[in-house]
Amino acid sequence: QVQLVESGGGLVQPGGSLSVSCAASGSIFSIYVMGWYRQAPGKQRELVADISSDGRTNYADFVKGRFTISRDNAKNAVFLQMNSLKPEDTAVYYCNADIKPRLRARSYNYWGQGTQVTVSS
Picture 1 (cartoon, rainbow, N blue to C red):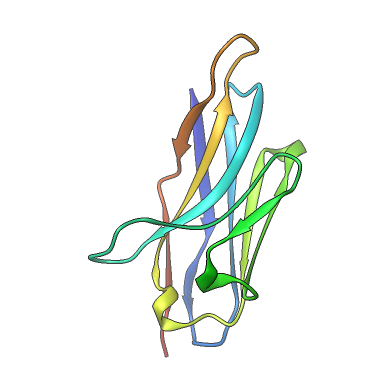
Picture 2 (picture 1 turned 60 degrees about the horizontal axis):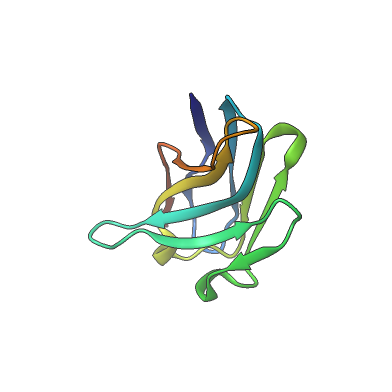
């Protein structure tokens, strides 16, 4: 069984910074793309950023220049550094990963439980 566990998040004032982390555990042979999504109340879940196993990154236009995604392959972890936060960044942030559990198995997509990020004065 594979688990994604997020940490970080919380309340921050507009213009502030916050970081969230996610660590994968369990039966893991390899991890392909890891990413962060977010879902605000009444809105659909949307991609924030993702990163491939070799470090290629992809960002949503609304976070370019403000957020940075990174990963530590040795720790099966992905991080999101969020700077210049705006009230519209308020959402539940979810970790996502494509994980191959065993050598002779296909990859599966997993989600974390989500962590709340609130940007408010």
